[in-house]
Image 1: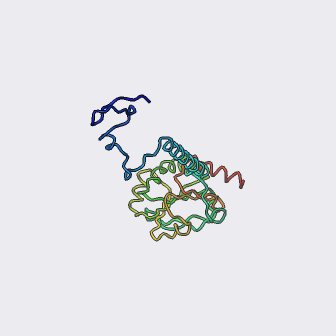
Image 2: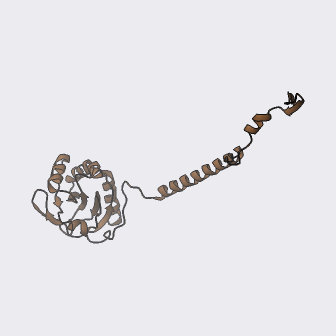
Image 3: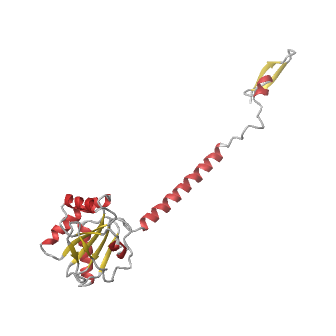
Length: 222
């Protein structure tokens, strides 16, 4: 380090390293013991690398959990009813007519619990109408709906809006929902021709997914 020559108060030349303050400046720039210590750049970089590693580990863990989770689109949800005889389906429709489903309906029945205010129910509504229309000619499957946690008038208006023509039961006292263990909308059960519950879906369902479930049920019980 080179020196520069400066003159002291008595006129005597003194030398100091370049870049080092002298006199009053030296006093002014002396480190304050109370000031917070500065973290060296190398340590800051090391901490940043560890923080990045932790973030990546957490992200990888979340990805693994999501990958292992079943699809929310349509999945056979766990239900004690699957494989057992379906509880009785009987009551009054939203149009005031009595309705009762035979214990062995002789065809596949899609039993759908819904509410008119439920957005996922509204999303699946057109697919349910398409499913009913596609199976009317063959008569191998049909829709039955149950209004859950909704008013009859709102449900009736909604059903007419989407063009639903199948029986829709009013469940004012929640008996049907309780019998089937329904906790939210939409919830759908697939009932086989012999009256067994073969699938339980807690999610919006499409016509294609219902057809796939029926095909699987037919393959397992020809």
